[in-house]
Length: 489
Image (cartoon, rainbow, N blue to C red; front, top):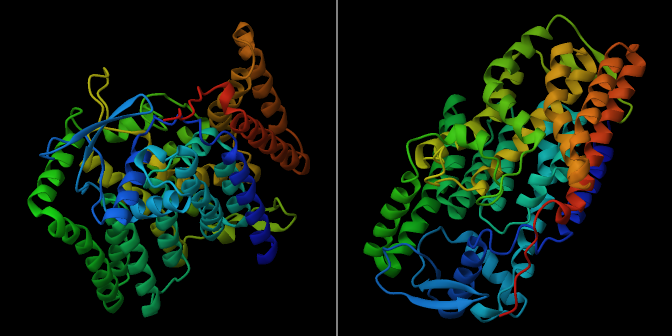
């Protein structure tokens, strides 16, 4: 596929994803499913207006507070607000002030969520670029389509939370390393340092971008680049505590200590199990989805199956018509050489580093529901990697026609497809889902035995059908997800 055609297709998919996200964006998820959205907007708004960040918080570290009732909700207002690094709060504050919302009571979810909607355009585009760089253009476009369409991601991209800024920052950081095999130019170290700094200034977990970037540079023994990137990241790392020292150092220290303890009080460590077992977008409502589940399974087993796939494709080259009519040589993409090893290392290091931080900092949720230390938005930065891995499986199935791969993929994604289809019909007919699932399994079985040229197009039709069902569900989320618009003051 020509580069211009790929980029144009990716831009159109990104625009389509934005349109899907815009439908009912201010009511689903409900305005109060993550009051952190209000928190960031108030912090930035008051910071620009008074020079002192002020917002709601229920941490006991604040010695003084004031209760304010807005939108039938009680908020404990504290100042100075020092719980998070400043970048996202300042961006959210600029947005509400640009819309003339000068008072706390004037802030609207419909305004706040414009920021993540805009960010989602870049995230979809960057997801496609990352998929192309690692697995090829067909995977890149397929991954972008999945990211644009599947309901949990659509809901996630509407929330005004720091993770929706961290995600494109992580993707850009990764593309910097994927774009250069030798990592020899000092300007790349500057770019890596800048985006590591932006991640650090967005949220505490953004330090992962710095650690991963420095780790990759050390792995390549690029010590000058390591030093430059480290200095830039260190400067950004100091900005947040210096802000705390400027307003109230003791309060800042108390807040950091309490936040760490809050993240550990939900129970004993089980973050990895929680991520898979509690598919949350916000705080309580579970959103089971086949792509997310399969993506996690592929991600956690990636260090094994990716290497195995590289080895197995050394001997046999599979050439198939791609989604755009170009020839896709799978073997050339997955040869077990140094460059491919570097691509896979970079691809896996970012999400694995992020999960490791979560596992060390957050307990997860108690199995019996007695505690909760995990919210759905913690996992948002992992979504691009999940859809890329699933998209790669789609392309790989078209090549290998492996029975067990097809069976497992159909079981996970097929059941998700049938579930979304039946969620939009009367509950009186839900018992008929079995017939639809059997029909889907039978259709997949028939395709398995078709001649190669017909099989490829049949699998492609199944993919289009799958994306279409997800897109339709995302456009009609109000039918399956209780919407809750923000009330008037």
